Amino acid sequence: MASTQQATPLSPLSIVAPVLHTRTRMVSPARWHRAQEYERGYWASLATRIADGSVSQLDWYRWRAEQLVLRLRSLGLTRLTDGRARVVEVGSGPVGLVGFFPAVERLAIDPLEPYYAGNATLAALRNPAVEYRQGSVETLPCESERYDLAIMENCIDHVRDVRAAMRELKRALTGAGTLYLTVNCRTGLGYLVHRALSRLRVDAGHPYTFTPRRAQALLRQHGFRTLQFDVGSYAAARQADLAAPEGRARVKALLGISEFVVTAVALCE
Image (tube, rainbow, N blue to C red; front, side, top):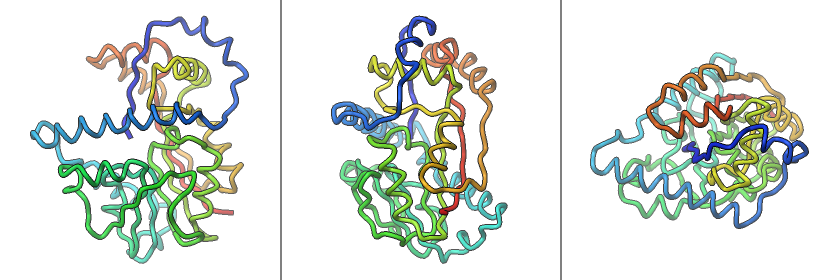
């Protein structure tokens, strides 16, 4: 998923106090629709750039799938990578990692599926062996206890109800199923600042914000045992933002909301 900020130069100290006791809860329908419009606009812009040849045809999907295969094998989960597993990807975007992942059954689910299917540029990038369905993670359009692997890359912070999302992911997996989850995280202070900015509608695409501790707690609270939990470097992310040509990235660094990736592989308990 895309990640972008449109921040105004607010002082962190001036906006931390009102959100010290913020708790995770379902976002409003209006907030959810703003996030979906943000996402649709991102993919529309990318499709235009693909069509005119200014960017590659999403080759990073293939690369990410290859990296996931290597990760799972390193953890002794070869049974998920030998082509016999059933795999579902939630929040797949127009193509998804699942399009390049070896599996006997591949399902991709995304709320914006009708838009992707109707965009000739994006639809042409798809693997015909993948079944694409419209749906939200809160009510997945799939059978219970069917899938050996669920993939959710960088979109748990885009959902409307994060608790319902985790329950549905657990429902879709077999009793011995595996969840692969990535999410852009922030430091504790970055979490507070970003929640305030989100409430001010500065970042329309991300109704939720995570820290590594919150991400790990979310997995534990919904019956997942973490097998691997990798935390990216905040210092490196902040330095990259400071060096970026876009003023928006530099503002993120100055506000302390630079994002670093957390990657988790977790087993159903």
